[in-house]
Every structure is written in structure tokens, then in C-alpha cells.
Image (cartoon, rainbow, N blue to C red; front, top):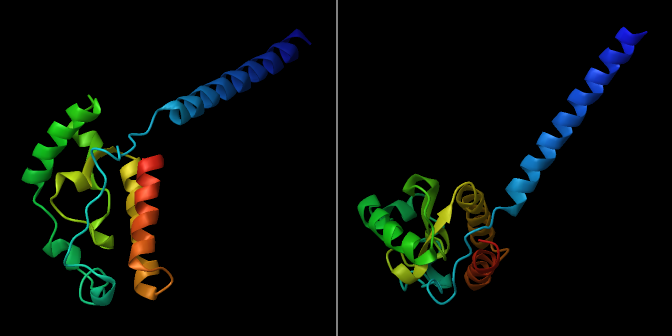
Length: 159
């Protein structure tokens, strides 16, 4: 009987340890602060070549953003400077120099007031949101201005 009690106790102890590890991991993830775009440093700047009237020739045309995306040499240099301004000390590879108003929604490609260092995995999550907002604009469910405002609101409040 002692042997069964010991095995049961061991299984209970393993289950408790697993629960604690999972709980601590979840707490750590949720307590890691996001890098929220600072409205003063990164208010967002629009690309004057993108308007509601021409979305069919710009943001709704497949491959268009590749024609205006700035080179990595530009965004990497800017990311270094802005990480220091934002007080971020992690490795460059842990961040994406993100557009506050994404290229997919008519943001200016190179204006530093439209770019800030966003950490992964949040940057990848935002990429999906940006693509969804683009699809809503291109399908007519949202206006360009509505999508741009939603994106700015998310990045200024949630990162």
C-alpha cells in the first residue's frame, strides 16, 4: 500500500509542478510589456500617393508594397536609433522596424514618424491584422481612412 501511495503522491507532485511551470510561463508572457508606439515620436504619416480614389492602382494591387518598401539598410539604421529612443536594449533581430500606418494601408514608406521598433512576436501578429484591414478596404467593407485609424489606434494602445 505504501508503494501505491508513493506512486500516487509522485504523480500528484508531477502534476502540481507542471501546473506551476505552465502558470509561471503564462504569467511571464502576459506581464512582458509591449512596445507601444509613442504618439509624439511615431504619430503616423500617410503616403500622399495613396488615396481612397486610387486604391485599385496602389494598395489593392498585388505586389505594390514591394515597389515602395524601403531597403533593410535604411530600416536597420533607423531601428538602432529608435530602439535607443524607446529604451529597448534587445537584439535588433528581436524587433521589426514597423510602419505605424502600414504600407498595405497607405503609410509613408520612409518617414521616421511612421516607423518604430516593434518586438516579435507582436510584429508578426500585427502583420496579420494589417493584411486583414487591407482586405477589408479592398473589398469595400472599410474606407481607407477607417482602416488607417483602426491601425493607428491599435499600435498606439496595444503595440
